[in-house]
Structures are given as C-alpha cells and as structure tokens.
Length: 250
Image (cartoon, rainbow, N blue to C red; front, side):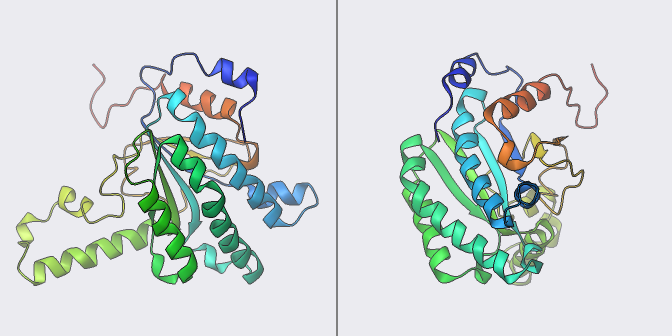
C-alpha cells in the first residue's frame, strides 16, 4: 500500500537526530478493531497485516534501521482454533505476497521464536524469506512468531548449560553478555523504543531481556489505524527523551 502524497511529502523532512535506531512494536488491537466494526476478528488481523507494509516502508525516512514486530506469542495458542488457524494461513499468505516487495525495498527479514510448533509449510516459507533477503541492509525487519521472552531465555539457558556441561564454556565465563549471545536476537542491537498500540499498558512477555533500558510508548491507536503519521509522531517524541541508563544526567 503506497503512502499518500501528503504523507510522502511530509516524511521527506529529516529524521530526528536523536531518534531510535531500533523500534519494537506490540501490534495490539486487531480483534477489537474488527469487533467494533461488526466484523470477525480475522478481518482485523488482515487489516493489521496490510499496515505492516506501510510501517516497514516508513522506517528509512524516520532513521529507523531495525524494526521488530510481535506477530504471534507463545500464549496466543490459547485462542480459538478458528482464530489460530486463520492467523497461520495469514502468515503464509503474507510471506508469499510480500516477499518480492520486501526484496525490492532492501529489507533483511528474520524470524525469532520457537519454530518447532509451526506447520512445516510455514517454516519453509519463513526460511525462504530469510534466505531471499539475507544480503539486504536497507532496513532490518524481525518478526516474532511463536515467540515469548521467557521461552526464549529458557531455550538460551538450556543451550548455554550444554556448553558448560560439555566443557566448551567455564561457569565463571557466564555473564550477561555471554547469555545474550544465545538469545534469538543475538545479531540485533537492543531496542531503543518499544511501542504498544490499542491502549493496553503491559509488555506481554515481549523482549524482556533486550528491552531492559528501552523507552516505552503505550498509545491508544489500534494497530490497523497505526499510520505512518502516527509512527512519525511517536518517533519524534522519543527524540525529546533523555536516556540515562541508570546514570545521573550531566
């Protein structure tokens, strides 16, 4: 979906000098957005999937190099079978439909989360998209699919424990930096800004380790209404914050 001429013109203004380089988004509100319009929840998820393209496209003009989006959590399996099956079909269609566009955009796509529970066709498509875009560097899109931060840290700790047990790593070598190299996000910088849409003020097991010092924005806008203008406004507000990482301001 192309940006409007007004939006495209506005976004030619320079990005904020102190803007976030890595933005992570909890894309919430699809189901409620649909329900408010008398539609099934999957209608909202379909609308939300279309919004992803605009958001990824807006990143370079806003100075955002890395975008991580929360697509499906380890807890979302608790939803109805109809909704889960519909979401899995939507993920497959998204990859098939958007692969060529993401390649043209120069987007490097990665998936994080536990793939084992996902169907084989979806796993194959995920690997295909990662391989297709592996040489790109214009913007880095990370999609969290069957992801939960506690699950991620648990899996990382298990792998680290094997390294210690088999003698490739000494216990005294284990520190926060070492553990971070076993996380799904080991090749990514920590997020500077985490946005949650739809008015909910919780982090829902998303990037708990990585977001220890991130700035948060909880906004009322539901994800299908998250336009590039809304994105730009949040990014520019971030530029007015002072990040101290526990230090005293100078």
